[in-house]
Length: 241
Image 1 (cartoon, one colour):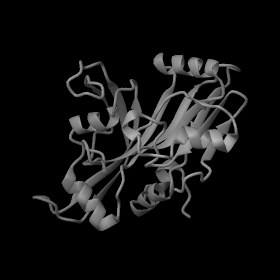
Image 2 (cartoon, rainbow, N blue to C red; image 1 turned 90 degrees about the horizontal axis):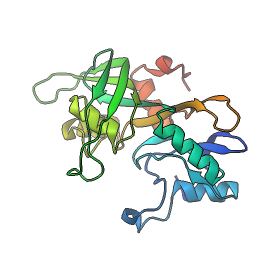
Image 3 (cartoon, rainbow, N blue to C red; image 1 turned 30 degrees about the vertical axis):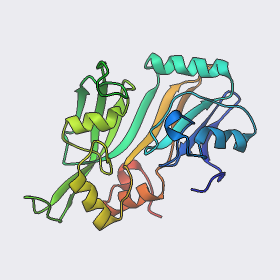
Image 4 (cartoon, rainbow, N blue to C red; image 1 turned 180 degrees about the vertical axis):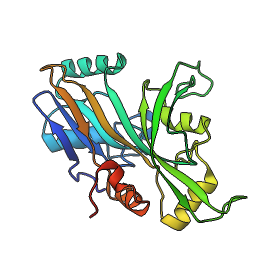
């Protein structure tokens, strides 16, 4: 995506705006991004011509819905909702193997620094669909993959990626916590060069007017191609192009 290209708005009202973040776009400036010049927050402020405040964040490699507030007060109220676990977050991910139909990962995680104290971390998932790929890898003549819906109850650093690594159901395209052999398979055979993790939905009560909101960021073209390839479009109620 080009710098200054408008982002897709999935919801806007007098107090907040939600956008569909492309994979690869940083959410905001930081000390580790001193050579970057494109950020979601700044792009949205130019797009709407107003000051905005982040209510939460996504990793650079993750696509999907990001929520921003139009005032500091609303940002604080949204922040308290996230802290109180009053916001339901649903992600889509493609993982290696076939996980159980549903489950809970209760496994403490450190912050950004691996040696920092571990904190409670809880992730729920359910398997939406599975597929078999007739390509040999290692000692297996074919490979299994699954589309899962993930609901993190807490918000630890790279929680979903680390939790599915813990289960040995690594996320496809995860170069930090995934499986290099499977990532290479997807690059060579499917042309996949990114993490398959998408922040699909946010569900919460509007902090100002009490409306029940369900904000959904449609999967992008690359995700759409994966879903179509494996016959998973109907699982999400998406029509073929």
